[in-house]
Length: 160
Ligand code: FES
Ligand code: FES
Image (cartoon, rainbow, N blue to C red; front, side, top):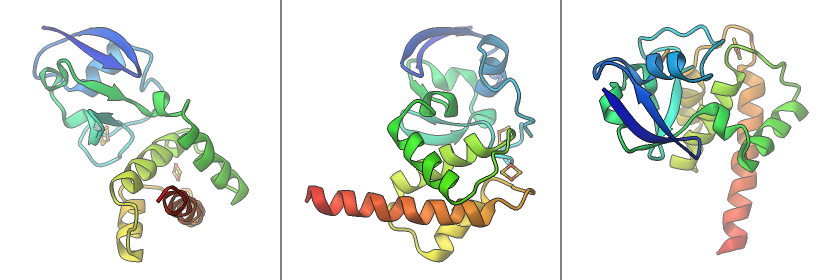
């Protein structure tokens, strides 16, 4: 089957079997997701994207469900001011860039606080643990995320 969709702001056509995962098709038909080592089982978080604004693991989304939808991937998000702000906060906290998952972490955590702007400590740690990290970066990610939440709170207070 062939489907049309909007991928990072561009109209594209993707071809594949209808029950093939969106992740598999994006990896085969586009330059996206070429380097990450991914589980394809919904557990590593490295294939997450926004499907009409909702964060989903693309390895669990059949291709047909993406028809006529709008997709933003971590690569697309990387060009936004939100990404630049979060990345600069993490750099200030001393983040060591991890080629396997830093972009996925930034994407996931930003999507999370867009949906849940005032998480409790427990909720925030649960969100941080959704993408496995074995390199010890989680405390730095947590510090940067807490600063990002504060900045966004101030922004909302000024606007009201
Ligand atoms: S590839 Fe690991 S969650 Fe989708
Ligand atoms: S951020 Fe990739 S393993 Fe920790």
